Image (cartoon, rainbow, N blue to C red):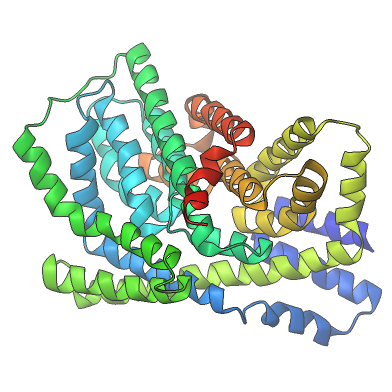
Length: 424
């Protein structure tokens, strides 16, 4: 019974059961009630791991972890510091620009929030910035980690929607930069209103020295995306090469990467990959049940029955995804909504699937810093030593700014489609 599966899913979430186990257990209940063979469930659980594209995920996680362990975050922070510290709320601006730089290195919003926040949040508190504001900046700006390529999340979307990984990477560049600069502007406006200080302007020599120090790290995303776009390597091959690059830079050039740090990066990779893959497998079973019960068609018919124009239908889908992003994690949301909303966007509205995929990615990214399940918000509040509810007032301006960016992307397709179109 479908309703029992959905009810049990939400009950388990309310009880605090991790999302992957909630989806898997509720799907198991459906199989037991319907008398379906357990072999079918196990087959669908493990068959989803047999994708060559998914091999890129552990390599990207490993490369990003190696870069962070090699002290790349500190180098990028220095570059960001020499670029924007003279603006109002200088340290807050440094946090935003650092997240944009780290996005191209780690490909993970959670990793960016932890590595950047552990350095800048205590420093902002020391200079009398409000702790909730410091946490809000770190939590919100770090979401560009999954929008600016390379991004493991983009690989999952490309696989689900049957899109090119290279084109997805290109499509994420401009939206990621728009989100970053929009949050930078939001930070400046808040700083002006609250009277947060700016820092002394850097010298040209200091700026050049910091750029040279981080140049090899900042070069990595350019090399990766170029290799994939120009057909030199697949996403998986490029991801494995990024590990080699990170090892060479960390061991031989920066000489900050020791064997204990490499082992720690391996441990992080195993844990991160396991979390992502078990969520993918559980999500696929749950999604299969929904599709077999005709839920996507029911939702499509219901939305179509509203009689809205295409733009109105798009806004309704964005609103639904914003709410879903607040209560569910990113990967399960992708597995739930891509099969449902992608056909509506492409067939009913007539949107390019790449365009809608980017809107979906940015929309769900906002959920990463909104309560109650925002991963980057949890990390930032932990570092700042405050409660999540303390940040709501400070997170709200960034959430509203993110919505404005989504609307810009929705009604100006070139924000997502112009760069991939250059390489068609």
